[in-house]
Amino acid sequence: MNILITTIFNYPHEGGLSSHITTLKKGLMSRGHNVDILSFSQLPPFKRKMLAQAPGFLLNKVKQGSGQLFNDRQRQKLLASSIKALKKNYDVINAQDIFATLASIESGIPTVQTVHGYYSFEAVSRGALLPDSEEDLIIRELERKAYQSAAKVVTVDQRIKDYINHLAHIRRIRSRTSLTCLLSNRKWQSGSKLARTFKYPNIKRCFSFREE
Image 1: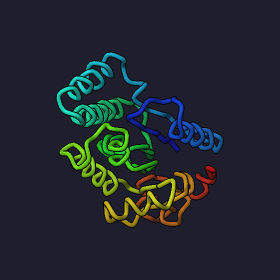
Image 2: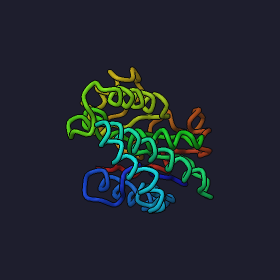
Image 3: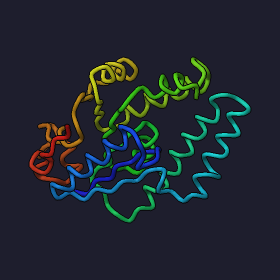
Image 4: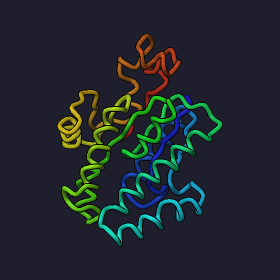
């Protein structure tokens, strides 16, 4: 199975997100799957600086939060273009943040989103957004769109699951599980709509690695 893991953040880097991606990739590859990672770090340096980081920095000088939103949206656009430019046919994309999810969905490839936190709330907490500002409300709406548009949503704990359920009113959420565990669910097996999409006769057999 060909799997692409996507994120608008840098990879590798220090932190739980990077560790999660590394562990997931190793586990999937040990089971014989082909796994690629596409992150912001892999995009051309000129595009990273001139199309996302520098304009975002300058916009934040004019209005707090506007640069954060611009930067994230530009990263989404750059990631979407890069996914479309890839020559490999992927069976599934596992996106690690809301903007990577929105970028991945544009490709038409089934996308599973792993949610590691509370995107807009965390941006407010670190001072990147002003609470209840225009930018904050836009990002909350983009969060809702990403959760509702993903084929499946995986959360790292129950509290995040409850948050997404409240924000997006969806039930296709799995907490404290990995992509591999999710795809072993009966709904993803032969005969289901998603299994036919993935073109695999037995998803459960293909995905038996369990991430701790």
